[in-house]
Image (tube, rainbow, N blue to C red):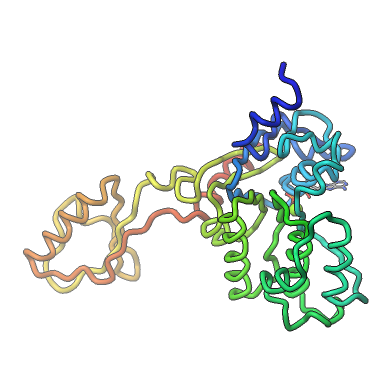
Length: 312
Ligand SMILES: Nc1ncnc2c1ncn2[C@@H]1O[C@H](COP(=O)(O)OP(=O)(O)OP(=O)(O)O)[C@@H](O)[C@H]1O
Ligand SMILES: [Mg+2]
């Protein structure tokens, strides 16, 4: 239909396009008709339970694994056929990376720099991942989190347009995780595209422009972290404890639990809060610890996964 040149130029807005992807390992049908589109400059997160097919999908996109069926386009290139062309333009942080334990951090980065025509400087890479102090340490002496930072530095050596991060912050302490998010965001600001997998809901919430939930080898939900599973429009719960005085009128009295909290569901939070606070001010009855609770990303995720497991 289109020539290769046309398809490359028409895909400037799309970094990754996957359609009907399938992959089996013997009798294990790991990916079962997966569709995905990642835009250029976007941070895209894939969430999903263990064995959902996330790593398999990422490795097919990297050209590291061959697909059985479906079409895949990464930066206008078919990774199954033109892996070499893709290699110079992408950076990869695999789920399980292994650097030579006897090389130093600096030697490791120098070695990778040798593979690329225009590598980034070692100083800049060390600064980006916060490993300046460990420049001359051997890899085997680094902590788990420090080794993961080195993995990220390795992925950045070739100044890639697109980054694949498969569970990039597993094993990081909370402050290292926040620093890593800063690094990823700064890469996105430079126009790079980032596709990552994670089991951390706060990571997806903080980092991702869009999230895909993958279960059983398929995308079961797609959206921004705030709208996933329609949690932005889900029924909200209003919660409070009543001070001394009369009970609220019917419709505002909800259900009281064993610890004395009143739980009130509302589809129109503004109206319910207005009615409730007006009643409180008129009667002088305090609404102690008043809160509005919406489903979290984790609630939405668990709900989506439970639906898939029920169907299986
Ligand atoms: N090399 C392999 N040989 C055989 N089976 C494999 C291989 N790699 C993955 N699988 C199987 O394919 C399925 C998907 O695995 P995959 O690694 O893609 O999942 P994942 O979503 O990345 O999981 P996790 O969150 O645990 O990393 C699993 O059932 C797994 O056991
Ligand atoms: Mg995986």
